[in-house]
Every structure is written in C-alpha cells, then in structure tokens.
Length: 375
Image (cartoon, rainbow, N blue to C red):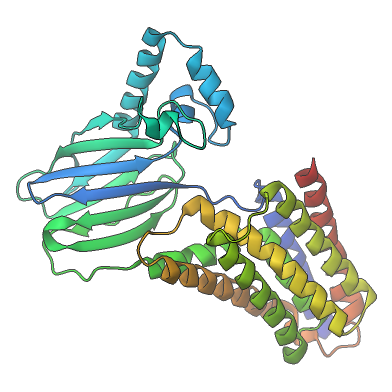
C-alpha cells in the first residue's frame, strides 16, 4: 500500500509539472503586462476613462511586444490620409471592444487620443506616434445605480481604478483579460479600497499560476530536504535577497536588463535542481548560493512590477503588499508540495525515487528555458 501511494503521489507530482510546462507559453517567465484604466465618475453627471496602452501597436494591429521604433517607422511611412484612417479605425476598435455599463446597459462615449501630436508623445523616452492614452468621455444616465467596466481580449489584463469624485471614494480592481468588473454601487455607502489588496493578489498571481520559473525554484529548495529547519534556512535566505533587489530596482537604485536576468533565473533553477542530485543535506555554501539567486529573482519580480507600475500614492504600501503576495505564493507552493510528497520524507527510498527524478526533470525544464531565453 505504501509503495502504491508513493507511486501515485510521484505520478501526480510529475504530471502536474508536465502539464504546467506544456501549457505555459511565456518563456520569459513574467507575462504581467497590464492595461491601466482610470474610470472617473464626475460630479456633473459625466464620466471619463483614461486607458493607457500601446496605441501605435493597436492602430497597426501589431503584437504588444513589437519594437516601438518599428511601430513609429511604420506609422511614419503613412500619408496623412492613411494615418487618419488608422486613427478612425482605432477609435472604432475602442467603441466596439470597450464597454462602460450603467445598470447593465452600455453608455455611448467619445474617443480621443490626447497625446497624439504633443511633446508627451513625440519627445517621450520611448518613441511613439499616437501616445499611450486613450480618453473616453460620456454621460451617466439619469438615476443610474451601478457602473461596470469591460475591455475585450484585444487588451491585456486590466488594472482598474474607479474614482468616485462626488463621494471622494477610490477603488482598485484587477481584471483578467476579457473579464467584466463587478458592479460598482454608485449609491450605497462605500468604504474605499486601497492598493494593498490588489497588489497582494498581483504578488500571489506572479507565483501561482504565472511564475512557473519561481515555482520550480522553490520546489528545488523543498526537494533537498522537506524538513522544517533546513527549509526555513533556504527560504529565509531567498526571501531576504529577493526583497532587497525588488525594493532597490522598483525605486530605481539598480537596473539590470531583463534579457540578462531571465536566462540567469533559468540557470539558477538548473543549478539548484542538479545540486539536489549531488548533495543530501543543506550546507552553508548552498545557503549563500541561494541568497545570490534570490537577488536575481528579485530583479525578475521588479521587472514584472514595473510593467504594472505602482500608484503615486501608497507607493511603499503597494510594494510591501506585492512582496507579501509573493511570500504567500511561495508558502502555498511549499504547502502543496508537502501535501503531495512530504509524507514520504522519512522513507529510505525518498531520495532515490522522488528527489532525484523530480530534480532531474526540473533541471531539464530550466535548461530548456535557459537556451530559449539566451537565444
């Protein structure tokens, strides 16, 4: 019976890793790119929406990760009439794929691109023609009780801020791609939400389910020894290190190109997994190495957070919340691993039948990522 349970648990563990590896398409490991949206409820009965996105890419129907200079060059080759046609099509795209609903009914709005032709676009550090801001403006229907926001899957995940000016309430939400926000009550007494909850969930989601590279690294720490004391030493070293570089990179103290960081993160997974097959217990040298790798992973977290951005207010609180979310995600990974295979830790065959095969499998995934991210 024990052998059957061991085989079943190892099968489930390996199948889970294979499934995640097959279904994960983001080899860079940090797919968090957000559409930043601010919906403003005005006291005069109107509403405004400022949506930040790569308008050049949208206008050309190009992927969001297309090189910005290539987009500028393509738009620059258009005649004025052709550019106007692209702008008009872009306006229609917003009209078709963005919805601001009051009491469940879409409200019409006008679309403008206020950055187009201004120094904010033409003199920006990152080149752009149309700018990054789409401004939507409309009228709130009389007697409306609720408002909802929707962006189609043409846009990335939405970071939504609802500013209810008449009641001086600000609410933050994160919407998955193609999802509609929950109805926001315009009438009921409301307690404003801060950025804390939103950034905690962003941190968690960056580990589960989006951070497969970090998941595999944490599993590598767990596999060497699921016993509490050595695990605490490893996780503590990793946590302190990534918190330091995450904070420093977020506030601009250090900056390292993601094209350097991401292959090294993959290499860290390979190192830890391979070392699991060589050593049998935690050594002081391993803790030092994990601390160094934690510095790398912190830079990876910072790259993801920079894609989302931090609110101008509550900046430090949002950073702490994001870091807390990362820790919750890591703890969840360890808890799941402990639930799947932790009860076999005292068996003689735990290392040969679980640790070594699983570590080799993780090392192979990490090696494949290293090659892809390097190339």
